[in-house]
Structures are given as structure tokens and as C-alpha cells.
Image (cartoon, rainbow, N blue to C red; front, side):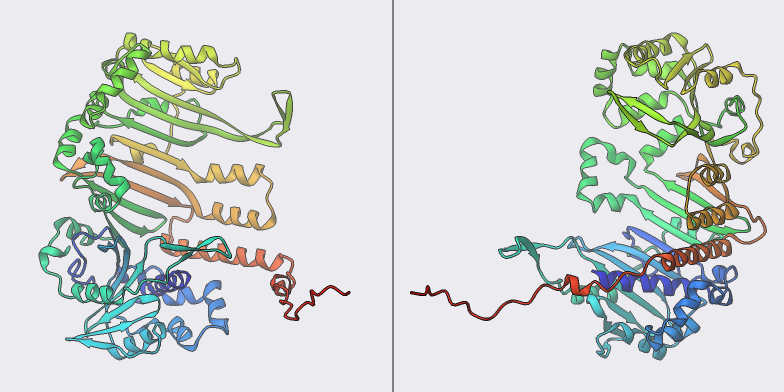
Length: 567
């Protein structure tokens, strides 16, 4: 298993190098229609953002090149990835499949530039055996029962991750189960790899319009996640069908398009759903978040927030959709209200916010006669607010919450208030009052990025990292890592919830401090900085003496002992 992971890691690293050396191929033609997960790298775009020359300047690259333990072929590959024989102008595709024995198959596909070089490259992962021919295909058995297959145009690597080891019998001497030897899957993998070159159109993603729409858009990385197939291939998730929760998975496909733009990482997501769930979403989906509620936050120092707008009837109808309305009403009636009260009480506007994060000196906490010392504790304002539609219905819910409030200690951090306009829960009464007063009229730069959508969220990395860096004791290496993070990460925004063409759309933007440099290059430089800091930390640690002699068991005494008793 360890060797498999090493091989997989090497292939991933090699793929990153290849993507930094610069046509989308015939998208989907060699990907099974029921693949669980697919990731496609747009090599042409990636090479324009981080070049091979950029990578050669990085510390991790120079360390690998200087490592004398690496074989010569690996150094040649690091120096010039074209030595692999792979066409560096075409796309690389990863996908995950599950076979009939419930083993996960990880596949890497791409295009061949020089078959001779590609064969020589693959022999480094084999046992020295020559490839076999199957028609126009070359098939080479690799270590750990993995397979490589190629022709003059395309190649595939098929790696298998078996199920957990099967236990056959117990070893009496060690009292631990002994696993069977790894199963030889080479025949099945060879058949699977061969079939990929001959997939019929209706058995592949070639004519899948959703996949085509994804990879034909401008982007750097494309991902495809088939949630229905994942559920069908997982016994635990399959049980959801008995609970009617499978409505969330039938026909569910998630696609992600990642773009490393200047100063930001942009992720566009689409969740395709079944007609039943799509009809539900179109009927009960909200319009746009209530920006007035956000502006009422009585602080400019927002660390994070989430806002949503939905049609209140969605709560009751969604519970009915999954068949849980009977159980829900039975429980709620004991509390003094029902689903109709919840639906009627709110107007569909919701806000969650965290502000004014700080680290507070808290010298001690007494609990059951014991004193526990605390040096630093986080202090912040937390707010949950919901718009009120019918106050009497909301009052029923408040009456139930008051029962819990009365059983809590006087210094409880939960403070709930109900007005004609809002229901508010906060850890500080003054903060809740500030929100309810409506006098704040706060302005936030992120509002323009999340407005006009049913959902919106914001997270400020700078404020969060600054608090950690200033108030929490760290060693010099952690301080360097925090400083590097502060120089790189700015904030993140989320917007979405719109329904279009059978899909729920959303967008995430991770913004960086440097707004002029493409984010992939910044990400590579940040990762290299973390690598250097980690190596500095390792070098500062005291050298451990060779412990091998301590771990070696003592020799067995083979001299027979005279057990006769002297007379």
C-alpha cells in the first residue's frame, strides 16, 4: 500500500510538472459515463501561469535536483518533463472508478508524443518486464499490480486501491490477524485499460452535454462529481433511499471550474439535480439576500458572515419531500408549536455573523471547586438573526426556548430577543440591541460581490490571521508561516443559489493580497515558502542518535541448559 501511495504521489507531482510545460483533447471519449470523479487539467492555460523556469527557481525543486539518492531517469524528468514521451500540449485527465469487487480504480490519461520515450519512462515503474501487445495497444504490468497501456496517440495508467485487508486467521504467537497477500488484479486492470480505448460514445462522457459545457468554458482545472453514482456504490449512502433522502442524490452531478486569475482563485460550481428536486427548488428558491440586515451589523470588524433568502414554505415542504413531516410534527407539538408555525413565523431572511474577534486574558475558571488556568481565550460577538413574518407564531417558538433559558445559569452566553421585525440570538445583549436598533448603517466592501443572489458569505483572512499572529504565542517558524500567510491571503466570498438550466449555480472567490500576479504563481510561491520554513524547522531539531541498536531484539541463547540435578 505504501508503494502504491508513493507511485500515485509521484504521478501527481509529475503531472504538475507536465502542466507547467507548455489543446484540449477529445474531451470525455475515454472516460466512463459512470465515473465517480473526474479532474481535467487545461495544460495550455496552466503553462502560461507557472512555467518550468518558475519551478526551477523554487527551493523544493532545487532540493530534489540535488538529491543524490534519486535515480538518473528521475532527474532527467525533472530537468525536462518531455523525456517522459508525454505530449505536453494536451490535457491530462484523472478519474476515479469503482470495479465489481468494490475496489477504487484511479486512472490517469493523456496523449503520447514519442512512444519510444514513453515506453522507456514506464519501465522505471515495472519489474523490468517488456510490454505485451494487444492489437495496436502496448500493455505493461507495473509494480503493485498497476497497469500502463498506450498506442501511438493516447496512454492510460490504471492504479487500484483495494478494500481494507481481509483477515484469514490469527497468528497464535502474536495474537494479531494476518492479512492475505495482495490480490493480483492485473488481468482485470488490463481488460479495463483496454476497454477505455474502445469505449462506445453512449458509454463515455464524449456526448454528455453537461461535461462538454464544463470543459469548453475558459478555465484551468475542471472537476466532475457524480453524486448519484457515489451513492449507488456506497452501501451506507445507499440506505438513504430507505429514508427518502435519495431525492438529494438522484441525477445529482456537481461540476467545478477553477480559474487562477490575477489576484484571485475563482471557482464556479453547478449542482445539477433531479426534475423532482429542481421543480421544488424553482418553486421555493429565494431571490436575493437582505442587505439591510447586513448593514445593521453593529461593527465594521466582520470576521465572517452568511446570509440567505428563501421562501419560508420551503422548510415544511422539504420535510414533507423526505417523508419526515409526521415525525417532525409529533416532536414539535410536544414543544407547543408545529411546522406551520415555523413556516408562518419567519419571512425567509437569515443572517449569521461573527465580529470583533480578539484574544482575552482569562486567568482562571472555577468549575466544581476546581480552578483551571487559561492564558488566552477567544472573545467575539456572534449573531443569528431571522426576519419575522408573524410575531405570535414566533412567540410560540420563543416560549419553548425560554424553558431552556430558565434552566441555564445567569451568565449564559445565549441571549434571544424577539421584536416585530427580527428574531435575534447573540452572545452579548448589547450587540443584539445594536443590531435591533437599526442605527448602524454599516458599509462593507464585500456587499457588491454577494448582493442580488439567494445566498452570500464572506470570510476575512487578514483579520483572522492578524489576531492569531498578534495574540497567540508561536515559535519563530510558526511566526514565519503566519507572516507568509498574511502576505498572501486576503479574503473569500461566496455567492449563489440561482437556478438555471437544471442546476444550482454558485461562485467562490479566494482573493489574494497581490492583485496583479496570477494566483497559481502565488500559490506555488506560497507552497515553496512553507516548504522552506518546514525544512528550517527540521534542521533546528536536535539530531537523534541511531536507535537501531535499541530496537534490535537480543539474540536467542542457543546453548542448551543442563537441567539435571547434581546428586
